[in-house]
Image 1 (cartoon, rainbow, N blue to C red):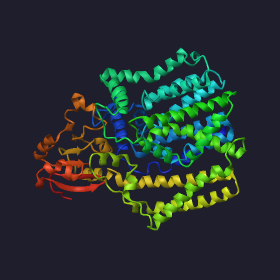
Image 2 (cartoon, one colour):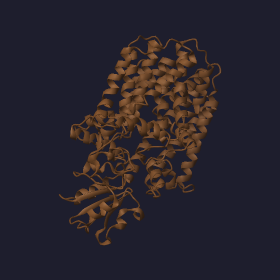
Image 3 (cartoon, rainbow, N blue to C red):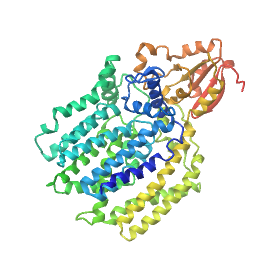
Image 4 (cartoon, helix red, strand yellow):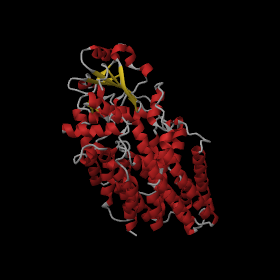
Length: 577
C-alpha cells in the first residue's frame, strides 16, 4: 500500500520528463528566468537576482538557485532549466497520492495522484521554467505535515508544515504562503475545534522564520525599497490594478478565468461537484472525515479568490488542482464502491463521454477541413499574444499546419477512448471507465508535449540569436526594442549587454529605477543617436514595424536581416552573408 505514492511518482515522471529538453526556450517566460539564474551564478551574487545586469524583484530566488545548481554540468540548457518544474510535478503527484491514501485508502490515493498530473494545466506548467509547480509542491508538503499531526501521527510533522511554508515564500512569494494558513483557519472555524495554540509552537514559527526571512531581509538591506515593491506594489496594488510599476501582463476576466481553470482540469473537474457534495453530506465524527473539509476549503478559497480578484492570469488556479484531484478521486471511488448516496456509474461516465465525443468530432472535422482551426483560437489563451494585442499589435500567426500530424494522432486517441468509454458506459462499469479515461489522457498528453515543441520552435528567439551570433564582432552594438523578457533567451547566447529601447513597462520596471540601469534603458531619441554613430549596429525588435523606432531611422541604414518568431533583426549595414 505504501508503494502507491512511489508507483504514481514513477508513472508521472515518465510522463513529464519525456522529451523535456526537446523544445527551445519559449520567450516569455522561460528565457528570462533561465538567464537570471545564469547571471546569478556568473556574478556569484545569490541574493539579488538580475537580468541584463538590472535588478529583478518579481520572484524570490529558489527557482534561480535550483537552476544554477542543475546548470553546473552542461550549462543552462532547456532540460536543466525545466528539470525542477518537472521534478516538482512528480513530487506533487506523490504527495497527493499519499494524502489520498490517508483520507480514503488505496484507490483514492492512486486515482488522486494520477489525476493531479493527468490534465493540461499541471502537465504544461510542469514543463515550463516557472516557479508555480515548485510552489505548489511546497504547499502540498505543508498540508501533508498538517494532516499527519491532525490524524495523530505525532508532533514532528509540524516541522514539515512550517518548513514547507518557509520554502513556499522562497518559491513564489510571501503572501502566497499565507493562503494555506487562511484555509486552516477557516477549517478550524467550520469544525469549531479549539484551542489553536498547539498549532503555533514557538519552534515552528522559528523554523518558518529561519527559512523564509533571511533572504527577504538581505535583499531589503542591499536594495532599499524591495519589500515595498514586492509586497505592496507587486501584490496588493497589483490585485487592485493600481500598480506604480505595471508590467505587460493582461489579466483575464472572471468568466475567462473560470473557463480556463475548468478546461485545464478536464476531464476530472466533471466529478468534482460530486466529491464536494459527498464531503458536505458525510458525518464528521472521525478526524479523517473532517480533514476532507480542509481540501474543499482550499480549492474554493483559491478559485473563489482569484475569480473575484481584479488581476489574475490563466495559471493562477493551479494551486487548487491537488485538492480538486482529491475530491474527484473521492467521487470516483464512492461510485466504484457503490457507497450510499454516490453517483451512479452512468451519471459519472456520461459527462466524460460527451466531452470525449465532442473532442473527437471536432478533431475529425478539423482534419477534414470542415472546421478549420484559426490561429486566433490558439492566440486566445496565449498570454504573449494577449499582451501584444493590448498594445495594439497583431501577434504572429501560428500556422496550424505545423500541428496537423499531432492532431491526426490525437484524433485516433480520442476516437478509441470514446468507443472504449462508451462500452464501459453501457456496462455501467465505473472502474473500467476511469481506467479508460486515464489511459486516454495519458495517451494524449505526450502529443501535447510534441505540440509544445512545435509551438516553441515557431515562437523561439533561437533563429534570431543564431543569425546575430554569426555576424556579431567585437565593438558591435546590439539593442532590443520592447520589454526584454520577451526575448530573454537571447542573453544566454550573446556575450554583450543589450540596451533596451522603450522597454520600461516590464518586470524590470522597478529595477530600472536603480542607478546602474540608467545605461540599459534607452528612449527612442537615444537609440537614433546611437544608430547614427560609426560602426555596425543591430536592433532586435518585438514591436510591429509601423510602431517601431526603425521608422525614425535613416532608411538607407536600416536593413532587415531576419523576421522569425515575432521578432525582427535589423542591421545598420547591408548583410555580407
